[in-house]
Image: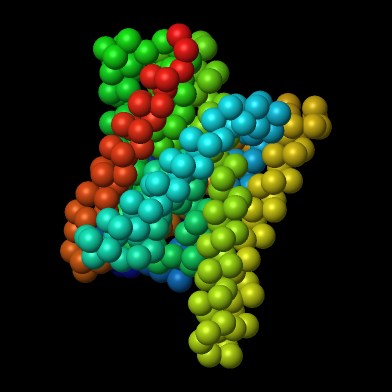
Amino acid sequence: MGAMTWAKALFLTLAAACLVPIVPPWAALVAGTALALSLGNPFPKESKQYSKILLQVCVVLLGFSMDLNTVIKAGSQGILFALVSISGVFLLGWGLQKALKLRPVAGLLVSTGTAICGGSAIAAMSTVVDADQEDVSVSVGTVFILNAIALLIFPPLGHALGLNQHQFGTWAGIAIHDVASVVGAGKAYGADALEIATAVKLSRVLYLIPITLVAAWYVNKSRQSQSGEEVAKSKAAFPWFILGFILASVLRSYVPQVAEISPYAKMVATAGLALALYLIGSGITRKTLKQVGVRPLVQGVALWAFISVAALFAVYQLKP
């Protein structure tokens, strides 16, 4: 069996392994990147094509985990802070991207993951702006690293700071990137913290809708100022999958039969995201990693510190 055949066999075997429920998305990203840097990607064209489709499908499936009644109730209590904090993250992210001379799309993706909901938000934004695999990979990798740290240190920090269940749930829901890690941290702190943290985080997921629509409008406008061929291409940039996300959320909230299958949709979304990140990681090259360096991580740490401190200050104002 030739070297290329071995590479193809290994590529497909690892891809299949990513569909196993116990495989976390970050591990799939690492596996894809390791394969690309060692043996190369035997299916570069297919990887890029199918990763984008998978990311869009996973965003739609995310909608099936959202009960709009609970989410809107949680979001309405802190809508002003949500707007200010999300806007602050994007403004600071833009400034850091300029200061650090980051690739603009990579900077945007790190900001989106920090402000909204980690890897899922990056997945949504990356398809809207047609991000390169390298930008998606380094952005997701940055967010996943910080997300793992937050999951470990937030519960003991919350106890050390004397936060009650309500305060910690609100803090975790705002400052921890990924929904799954928010659930993990909330569960470790207590039942009330788990409920509040999940609702707060999911309420921030709703901001994906206006943010991606604005991004799509900006991309379209930029392309329309270029050649006629790219004007036609820009019409495909509208994030139709966001409408699927909204529809899934409505069905989950008001159709009991759909609510019953919500856990299965979430499981499929997790597996799909893992496979998509594996495909994205498989498109990484040594040259790109060298060019990117540690700058996205620096931006990610700065943004995370900003939102964590701001959220902590806000929750201290909540009544015990």
